[in-house]
Image (cartoon, rainbow over all chains, first blue to last red):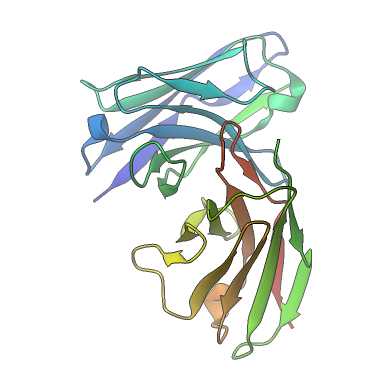
Amino acid sequence: EVQLVESGGGLVQPGGSLRLSCAASGFTFSSCAMTWVRQAPGKGLEWVSSISDDGGSSYYAESVKGRFTISRDNSRNTLYLQMNSLRVEDTAVYYCAKDLYGFRGVFDIWGRGTMVTVS
Amino acid sequence: EIVLTQSPATLSLSPGERATLSCRASQSVSRFLDWYQQKPGQAPRLLIYDASNRATGIPARFSGSGSGTDFTLTISSLEPEDFAVYYCQQRSYWPPITFGQGTRLDIK
């Protein structure tokens, strides 16, 4: 079964740090670009960051640039999001998602999300 | 940044009726427009990509159309499980990828 499972969320004070993980299974992780999308409570979806299959290219939303770092370990089938200098407005459910094909930004598989609360 | 505007914000219909959801882009996105469905407490699910291609396992009652700045998601005959929030997403000249604000499809 194709699956993504996020972990690492929790309660953190403003200015603090967290590292989210996303464990992938059921597909060839090293061949797939990956993305983090977040959703603040009661709000819509916001793209956060994406990384290519080999980790050589990455992109960030302006709202997180310079504070968040996306990375991956293809030997562990795991995607990461290091979040530093957290702000109240970073409070959200964070989803990891797999790209359908290439590095196109079409997300066909999503995890269930992990909640990050900055307060 | 390309802004996507979805309309209506809320759509109230009955099972069996036809639903038409709109997404308008602030500038042309060609056909790089996708649709997602999200139910309460669940992750989004990909329905349509590249404006009109159904994702794997998506029923034929879901269809997408449009190009440039105007796009439509049509559900031909609503089933009870279709009542959810629908988001459009563009990925033309990304980053950034942007989402519309969503259309809530309610049971009338």
